[in-house]
Length: 193
Image (tube, rainbow, N blue to C red; front, side, top):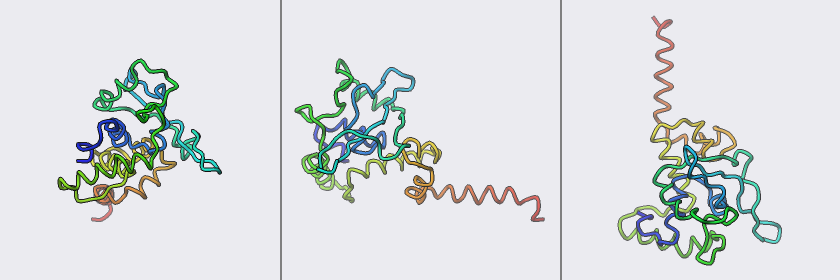
């Protein structure tokens, strides 16, 4: 619902966030050269993020964790959206920019695009008030619902360990509880008679 009413300028960016599960600071630090739409599968390299120094100035630095450096496979629908963004652009340019070609600032995106889109979606029946970071959680939820392994989800999200992924998203895996119980039942059949 939010994507339907998102301002056109940031629709692809918002789609990217939900289709990759990347953090806002990672996505906005991407350069055109980080995207490889011709590889099999198409990919994006996450290897940097926006950071703030002691004087509250922004600079591009390392990802949140060492595991944050990763390569993410891109789905065909997202590849279609990204073609226009990478075509004929120098590799050192930011992938996602403001109309002036500058970095997307979280506070301004939130105020001028995210909040109006959420409010419009709520007027059409959305019951929640999601944050931008909830796009990352939505992505992880989709992967869990589709049966993607915890290891794969952890790597895709850039978590330092599967334990982090499990702590954040474990409540979405009730089938894992049943699978554990079923495996135990199969294992004990030999000595419970």
